[in-house]
Image 1 (cartoon, rainbow, N blue to C red):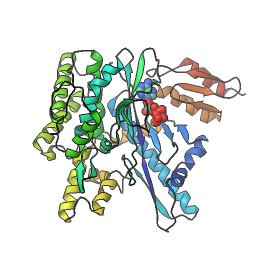
Image 2 (cartoon, rainbow, N blue to C red):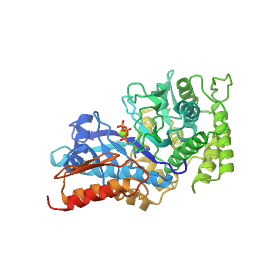
Image 3 (tube, rainbow, N blue to C red):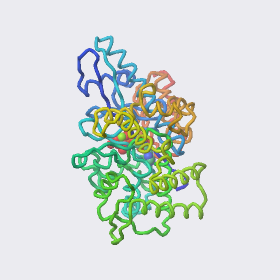
Image 4 (tube, rainbow, N blue to C red):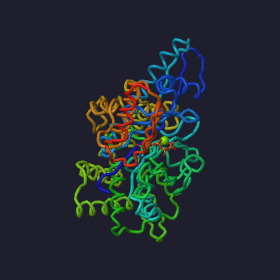
Length: 457
Ligand SMILES: Nc1ncnc2c1ncn2[C@@H]1O[C@H](COP(=O)(O)OP(=O)(O)OP(=O)(O)O)[C@@H](O)[C@H]1O
Ligand SMILES: [Mg+2]
């Protein structure tokens, strides 16, 4: 697939810390956070002008799902825009709370585990051709996803047999199955719920729920860029080695916990490569594929260079090669440096605090953002691209149609509703348009609805 639709869903951790001793339950804090959203859209589940979806499910983890994107940097910009949207809500909520006599701060974390041990996700969505047999795709993709934590884990602290250890991944300990249709009860690596948000005859939406959220744009680039390349290789139908794992869930955990890349993973074929060897093998296959077919976008070389550099860094245990680029390595340097300087064990409360504050999305408070300002963490985007993505949809996908529709409805004050594929005008003669093609940027039937809205009822 030459052009692919991508979307990223991020659930945030939320914490309210009162300075007047008056606590709020997480649900209450989330409700306060979403008050302006409900005022704007009469619901806690809305689509914004930039084509994204902002919502609060049951519970207290606000979610931002990017609009459909078809380019890597565009996707990263739209994901970062979600942080800006959330920060704006935090500011409004804190003011409102103060007016009601609550003095305190709201914290939002782009991480995957809260202090009570609950996990929440960062889901990746990839449009794939229906004709690729799903079982074959999953068989090939899962070995990559299980070992992908070497490339893009967010780093975490886990207690293993009385010892607190630094591990690769936040999500690894919270995955329970390889492939299934559930997302919460039994968390699978790949979710098979078949909702393509596109023409089901030709397309599927692959829903990957195993990934850690990324603070670093560079890590995000590698995470999505490498996965897209592996998907292209699978989609091509070219020969691929049988790398099926005997026990993906056992492997994902042991790889994360060992934090060496040297964990042996048993394959169904009987082979026993290490996690690193598996990654080298997949990188070699992808490089061969790119050499034969050429790069399909201008970031491919950058993705391959980063991918290789991470594997060299893990193999040589020389993390300085990647400690400005990859979340786990940036965080590992921060934590081990601080622990050594202050003579603290990894089980110390202050170290746990660093592990959390790394993910605080507030640019003045969050440790990742602090490191970036000091030149100790790289980025890939021009900040203007993020500001643009807060206001505007990707111009190259269906999000442009949705955005135009929402703007017109709000300008005219008409009643409307939308989801990923439907645009519905709910007044007068009204009507609903199904926009099945996620690559389309215009739709004449939607334009007619807009015309209708502009006419007096
Ligand atoms: N045809 C498509 N192919 C791939 N991704 C798509 C397509 N259409 C929309 N998306 C993306 O899929 C994501 C859907 O997010 P949403 O949160 O609505 O997902 P969901 O599957 O309904 O999950 P849940 O409601 O359980 O969180 C968005 O990021 C969106 O941009
Ligand atoms: Mg979602």
